[in-house]
Image 1: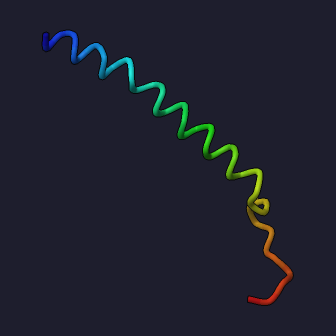
Image 2: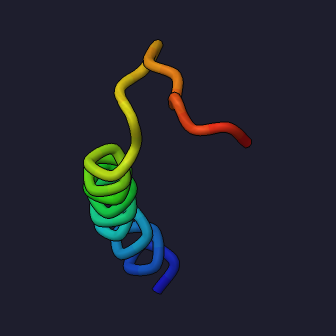
Image 3: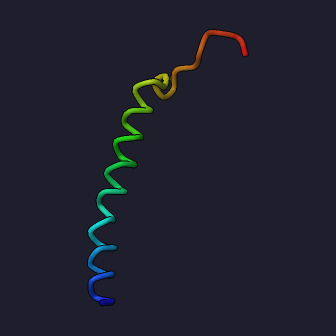
Length: 42
């Protein structure tokens, strides 16, 4: 049984990494380019 649990935990890993990578890409679409400051006053 413990071997099954370890296998399933390993199988879940890439999905979580993939979700994080996709989230970062999607958020980057809505952020200003790095090094460019906004011209609007804070």
